[in-house]
Amino acid sequence: MILSTEQIKEFNKNSLTDHQNEFETLQNKLIKSEKNTQDIVKKIEDFQVAIPSWALGAGGTRFGRFSYGGEPASLEQKIADIGILNALTRSAGAISLHIPWDIPSDYKAIKELAASNDITFDAVNSNTFQDQPSNKESYKFGSLSNISSAVRDQAIQHNIDVINIGNKLGSKSLTVWLADGSIFPGQNNFQLALQNTESSLKNIYTNMPLDWKMFIEYKPYEPNFYSTVIQDWGTSFMLANACGDRAYSLVDLGHHLPNTNIEQIVSTLMLKGKLGGFHFNDSKYGDDDITVGSIKPYALFLIFNELVYGMQNNTQNPDLAWMIDASHNIKDPLEDIMQSLEAILIAYAQALLVDQKKLKDAQMNNDVVLCQEILQEAYRTDVRPLVAQARINSGGTKNPLQAYRKFEIRKTLIKERGTHTLATGL
Ligand code: LRH
Ligand code: MN
Image (cartoon, helix red, strand yellow):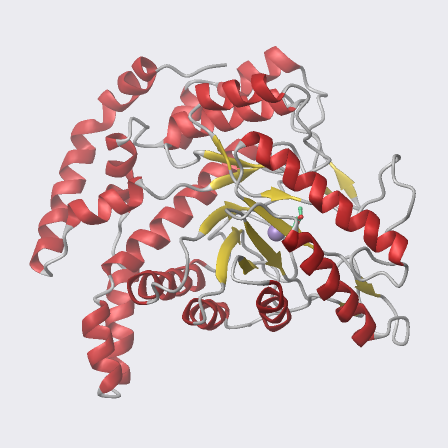
């Protein structure tokens, strides 16, 4: 199913007048506080989020999975689905592959298909948390941290294979997330596990092309429930420093213990030039991987406020990799991702409204009340007309979700693919 620009233009026509009124009203309000609306809209247009290849079907838990119908059963169909998301939102211009769930069979064809959908290949993700039929060694007791050098070598070689796959597709970064850890006290020698992990990561790093980055993703628990080798930002930061200049920490929003101040972690990693990117999602309790901004939208805004400050002040930190990492247990996966994209762009737009100079002055005067007022003035601004304008400027729809339903895209996908197709992934 391909969406034509004519269809998109036709859809926008009906709501353009309302949009222009809303946009001008907001623009007039922002001009009063010397905000350059055009500049903000341009920044939103340029904000591209990579879509995970493993989150285009219905996810599930150990308690069950409810299929959604019309799910993509191949990498080609996954790229087509991201093509639909990108046609509607113009902010989903990249795919992040997980290997071996999505190994291309025909690299040339896959690259042409992606290009025809305006999609590039973002970070590739290795998988040493599941055993593959072709594996000689098991990852039951860990991969890069395993006490067995044979297991570590297999895991290192897998990461090198993933880099080679990504290289053929034009990807420029590898994301390493390890499930490695323990379920019971005494099960692991913590120091040995960390030393093995460090030397394994260094080995992988030396096998990365010189224009590649490595993202080291941390997580406090699951699937191990007593210890995880790369459990927190500090461990990831330490390992990134041990590997080299092109190794960075990756912040998955769901990988923090309750009430962790994630925005402070973000500011610290940016100050140290070691923040590589994000896996956006939201959660109430654990690594719930649900819709971005559906539980803690203010926390997301505070994170983007630190990102905007960092992007303005920390030239030592590279351009960031933006990715969604979600799993859809009850929502239509494409609708869920469109809601996440909207929440991400809204938080970014609100953060761009923060008067960083005024905030710094208030901080330098310990004017605590004014600090909060400056932040919440931005957070309480309805920036949706700015986000919609950015989409329209880029040839997308004013309201992707409405367009998706009006065009009955899920119905068409079910007609084309049936109700029982199964997407690889989580
Ligand atoms: C681990 C994680 C990681 C992926 C996986 C799909 O929880 O966030 O980023 O490899 O989800
Ligand atoms: Mn993740």
